[in-house]
Amino acid sequence: MSLSTKQKPGRTRSGETSAVRTLERGLTVLLAVKDLRRAPLSVLARQVGLSASTTYRLLETLRQQGFIEWDEQSGVYSIGLRAYQVGLAFTERGNLISSAHPEMESLVTDLNETVNLAVLYGTEAVYVHQVEGRQLVRMFARLGDSAPLHASGVGKVMLAWRPEGDVRQKLGDGPYPAYTPRSITTQASLLKELGRVRDLGYSVDDEERELGVRCVAVPVRDHTQQVVASLSVSAPTSRFTEDQIGQVAERMNRAAAQVSTRLGWG
Image (cartoon, rainbow, N blue to C red; front, side, top):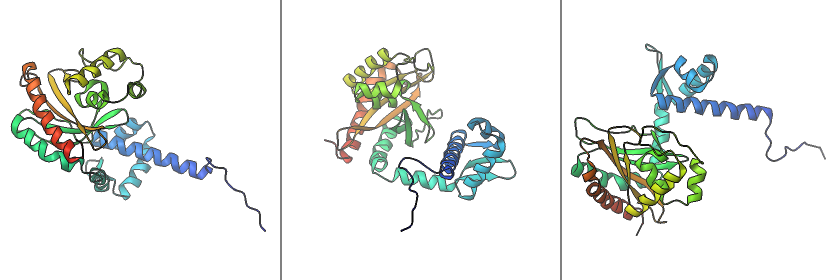
């Protein structure tokens, strides 16, 4: 009987460790391209904190696999088709977007403003679907962009119905970043605001992320009764006055209820 050495659980060989590190770096580069949309090698290298040569090797591997595209004339990298296909697989894994889209279209017809759908991912709210309004000046987020939980309507909605301990774990003790003078920066103030959101049934981002922009967001629930997403409408404060908040929120909650019903809630 021959003897063999067995690897202890939880340990990896040095080669495997190196491969994992390379994968982590490659994903970091891919995310940087997502954030910047289009960027040359030098900018991406600074963004991820790696040398230009290392960043180039990672980009070239991603390009060969179709996750990154490179424009030879401009020297600019951008997201490739394969990355889009992966993202599409995520949106198709459930029926959230298909359930929400008709109601979002209806909201745009009634409110004539851009409507967004966001989900909770880690410590951020991520926009996964959008129907644009027809105003000349529109307020919208790019799909895949994230918003801070403490300073966005969608973020506060998705925190409001979670256990307080979960909120503390996700955001920490503070202080939280101030994007404008109206941003909530302390834990005590945020917890108080989340209680207000629960009482009202909707949240308001009243120039907390960007001055001159007001947002109303409402919860979407699934068959487990949990808040799994948020619908939001944003508009310039000149077009979306404080007097309109209640009426807009009521209309949005009716839409969210229809989406929730399609997801098995109620």
